[in-house]
Length: 176
Image 1: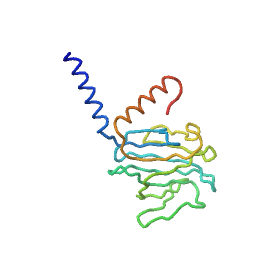
Image 2: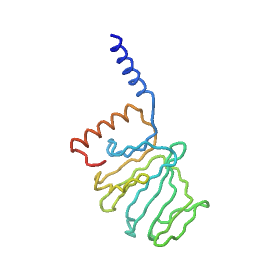
Image 3: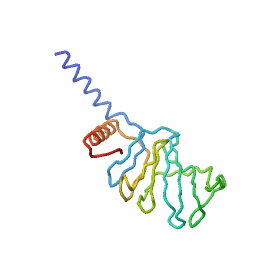
Image 4: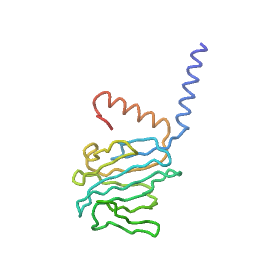
């Protein structure tokens, strides 16, 4: 009887903790569904890559997560100057030429949330930290993706992880 009571007590404690504790997370959502979830800490970075719509050259935007878990645009890299690039360089930012690339460095632009239009035509790409580059449109399909950093209850993190594990092991989801 004591073992059963102890098991229920531990289960209840785990259940309570999972509703109270929040984790800092980085998410990509498409049509209200999380398509990418990662635990995040200050200093983590991610890149968004695409083809410039006019110049048809590569553009990469580098973002970091600050100590308040805000998304910060830190650098824009592009291969050719054209319509829109470079854009609104502030006094603390610097445009430099680095081989075939132009870089706007010293950026610290706070971005509360990114509505990112991914499209096969623009070769949309995503990279979190040093992980592999994800061909976004190929993996997730064309559409608008919301990119956010914030807090998630431990219970939701666990549910997402179990759901993802199940999908991967049942053949419904290849990688992401």
